[in-house]
Amino acid sequence: MASVSKPIGPVECAVFGFPGSNFSGEIAPALADLVDKGIIRVLDLVFAIKDKDGNVAVVELEDLDPDMRAPWAGITDSPAGLLNDDDVDAIADALEPGDAAALLVWEDVWAARFAQAVRNADGELIMYERIPYDLVLAAIDEAD
Image 1 (tube, rainbow, N blue to C red):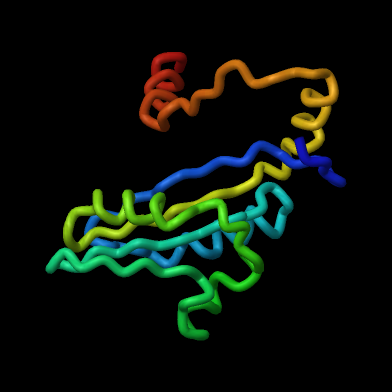
Image 2: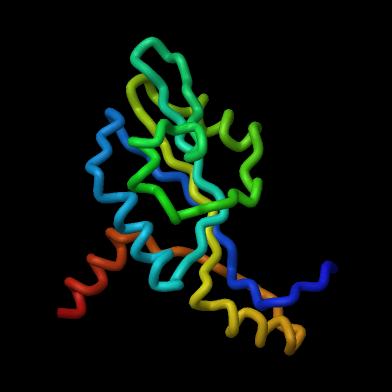
């Protein structure tokens, strides 16, 4: 195992789908806020867009023209290369015509110290599951 000079938090990957490619303009500022607060560190971010004819465009932040890249400035300065072409192609192929997806890989910086403490104690992750938003809302509603 490689030696790491600083603790690294859990690294997560998610794909966010956008039916109809309806981007609201809220995503970049919300993501930038998480980065600025030191909650996460974006390691990779790639967009895939399938036009109505089924043609796919894969766009990385550094490929955007300066005006389109401006809202994303500082979110990730040097992609880590954790997403490969096969990952992106699989997601892009699964898109319906007219839809888009964002592939995001991030480090949970907020958990780095805890994760390192677990590793130092020879601990290992046994189970991890994200509880869907709708189930959380239902549980909260039922508890009220």
